[in-house]
Amino acid sequence: MAGTIEPDAVSAPTSKRRSLVASTVGNVLEWYEWSAYAVFAPFIAAVMFSQDDPVSALLSTFAVFAVGFLMRPLGGIVFGRLADRRGRKFVLITTMLMMAGGSFAIGIMPTYESIGALASLLLLLARMVQGFAHGGESATANTYVAEIAPADRRGMWGSIVFVAIFGGSVLAYTVGGAITASISESAVGEWGWRIPFLLGGVAALVVLVLRRGMEESEVFTDDTTPAEESAPAVEVPRSQVVRGILLVIAMTSGITAAHYTWTSYVSTYAIAEQGMAASSAYWMSVIAQALALASLPLWGRFSDRIGRRPVLLAFAVAMIVLQFPLMGLISDKPWTLLVAATLALVVVAMPGALLSSTMSEVFPTRVRTQAIGFAYSISVAVFGGSAPYLNQLLNNLGIGWASSLYIVVLCVATGVAVWLLPETKGIDLAAAGSTPRRVRR
Image (cartoon, rainbow, N blue to C red; front, side, top):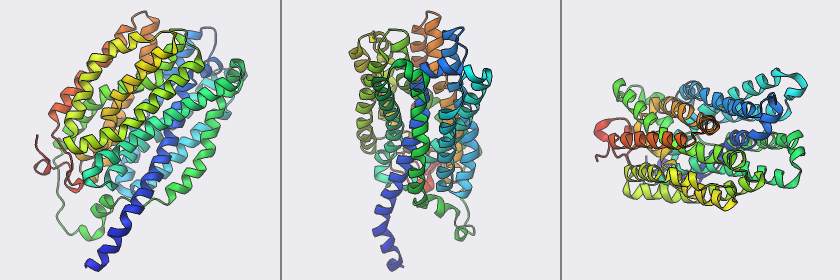
């Protein structure tokens, strides 16, 4: 028996690292394609909606952004169920192709001036497809990386999922900064805004090759192998799964609202509300997100040492204290955006690094992806996807302070949910979701 196990033990670390790279690169691309829409929102608003009211056009652009998020719970449920039945690898390849197809469609679609309101409808449909795929991608990536990670380094490995989120956003803002610095603003408005979406479609071909070489999660295959069907399955009460879903929704509410405010909206706020030059706002956002990205593995590894709950609670307290002063710091001067966004995003990185490990440790293997897909996507759709629209709307109404209050309230909800969740650092994922096996507070 030992002779058959040892070769796998030797080869597993290398193959798992290759699988981690393939998953991460694909995740970066998907988040790049998703974030490019928010980065170029002012330009998309000008060509895809009626310009009789520019403010309404910008709000409509963010409304489409929010609708894409509303498709994520459906994608999380559908693809989550597929991932729990057919495997994580199958879903990660499928969702990547759908996301890339939506990106390419946005890059070539006609404008409002050419076909009228049909252009707005096509944009909406493309974002709905992307949102559907994104819900499945996010749930499956969070599950997959946690399942292939060593138990004592699951926090650090899991942080790579959020590295991809920040990495995709950094890449989108870098492309945005390069385009706005290289060509005139009028050229960006005419055709330059299409470049990032077309690049995303082409890059998908490279990622497809990488993902086809991934290995399936051993936690999944061990749980679904026919040899185990004769053994009695450990059943987790439905009420316990439902409780976990509700707590994950509450836990991620403040995290996702803060994340999308400080990544997808804050540059638009600096440009539209404070008069900052677009290229300056983009580059300040790139630097801030890059710095936050670098902190993610550190937060993940820190949680492997002291636990998930202390780090998550520290985020809630820090964001409650800092949200108002940091948003108030931003003016038309680029350095103000750099300082405010860097501090806010390093704080957001604290729980972001832990989401993959924490959520995976809450749910049992047989329903893990669909439970994460539903809970995470619902929270992101309701509290994250609406954040840019809500921020812009409240600023237009002259009560921008209310958007910061909204984030503070949600961070309180995050803190309460974390307090109710048990510490799960280092548990065996095969026993996840089973209360007696969890590490007690």
